[in-house]
Length: 326
Ligand code: SAM
Ligand code: SF4
Image 1 (cartoon, protein in one colour):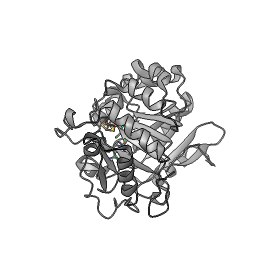
Image 2: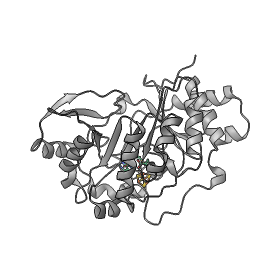
Image 3: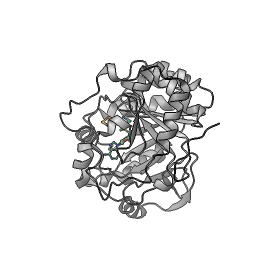
Image 4: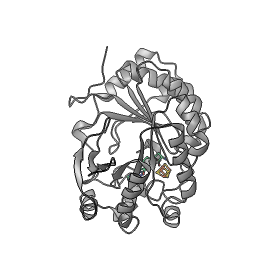
């Protein structure tokens, strides 16, 4: 069976689907203020088109799929989509990244349909600050988190983008919150993706600084996490809490990159920080055969760039983050 191995010997086994570029939040580092450039619905992949592509990727060795966006839970057919994806032979791990604003109503059906684990974005525990960063409602996120726990979704990982003058002073409180609620915590550095990400560069904090701040209050020991991806994990001594540090800027992890991203318009992005891509929608709509699509994917993977260039060319990636799903 043909496998997705790029020209640097990296095996691609992880596909992230941005199932919609729409979102009910407006995180200032993700979607630019007043942004109007959302995709037209006729150009977005249908559920059947997504499912077909995931089946072809799975035949090429992909076994891990994450649904992201935009906000995946604003897509009306998301539960049916999860159910269909979970039935594809070879997909062993189906997860979701969500802002949790609609998780309270969807958690139980998501779990039943096949989502085993979720990542929830949570940048502040103060509702005023949370609203300033996201334009969203913190109460709904907290209710969504509780519903996910009740539904038996595990693990629940909290993703916190750490920003100077916004939430750097909350990193210790977030550790306490995650200890108390038995969540896994991951800190993320801001990336210059799209105009919003580029504007957010002033807020950038290296996670080395975050670690120094936390070490004044907590004692850490090294830890491992199943399916950890690029995060380096530490455990708070004497507690179950694991903390991941995702450092695309200060310490990139491109040499072990195993993922590609598919946008809601059917564009396959080969690297989050580069423009290299393959347009799959025309192939789907011109009735290309499975073999033709798989060959196009294989050819694209051979062009996967060696690494991102966020530090040297921060203005390069103009698409907004919600198109590719982070
Ligand atoms: N709406 C969902 C959510 O917020 O979790 C899924 C999509 S969101 C684009 C996925 C992740 O990307 C979130 O954890 C978010 O914080 C992160 N993200 C968005 N823009 C970012 C940026 N400029 N730098 C770093 N992370 C970013
Ligand atoms: Fe929406 Fe997620 Fe982007 Fe925030 S980070 S605007 S929740 S897609």
